[in-house]
Length: 188
Length: 203
Image 1 (cartoon, rainbow over the protein chains, first blue to last red):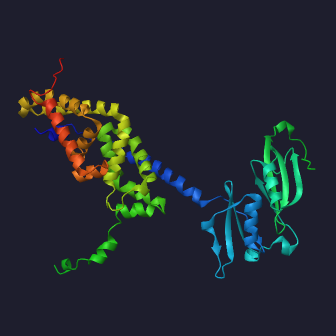
Image 2 (cartoon, one colour; image 1 turned 90 degrees about the vertical axis):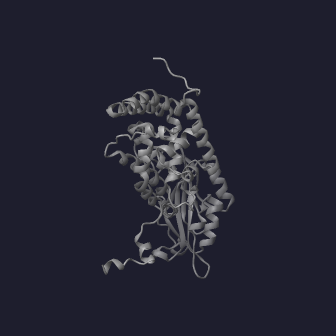
């Protein structure tokens, strides 16, 4: 008998459970979902209106360290930025011309109706960079027993961007044990 | 009879046939979920292949791993190949290298089953006697082959792959596949034929 035919004689099929293929499919689909989901981005994306979008974009990059996702930029027929997406850490914000979706810049409206909290690794370095880029500091650097989150002690400052949107930058100092969480936090 | 002549035209037939593996893998670059269809198409074949080598239990664990690896490497799939199966065999062959011990165990068990099968055939009692001696030695001889030769041999002998398919699976030129198989054959002959290098085990 030829060697290959002899080898063929030792071939034997395994006996599988009827559901043998299901676990493998589940494993593959889990790997696929992992690849798909990051592309869907974060659950909440603040959209911020500006009079001058391109000035705002360059300021946010320079002063606050945002990074534009260039492939996501929308440009109008006249060459103006209709919408830009900026990343910071694992989060995204969108910026666009005021008037879209009924939102207006504080520079036009004269009021700030909300502020955005951003958690950074080194708030002192961040503060230095913002000041150097010409950000207006609304509240200087200070330590708080807690801030927006009741279980964390922060070092924080507040800055205004070119059009008066208010940004609050925090660095986590330590977690606050439950026993220390008494009464309302007092900020300076 | 008249109806039988009304076969669909080529264009029509094309829209009715399902997309090729290469098309599906290409589509999965933008729509990863499309890769699920590659599993549905080929996982049964791949699972049988793994089962023959390492048994049902290990094979069931490996098949998902194999397709996960294939999914992650899908950008490297050569789109000029319409069928993904040789590529999947290649990934499987690599995975099996980590299961050499289980494979050897199963091969010896297969040899015992083959002996029993021959012995059950009463009309071939002389052949059965030969088989009792022969099959365990075939198993040992296959085991003793270098990895590359054993893989090529088993893809041909057990999976009925063509030389071209083996070349695609193992990412080798077809000439190399041919020479590996020739070496595997002569190794087996040496180990099996009377007067060869065989060593009969004493019991």
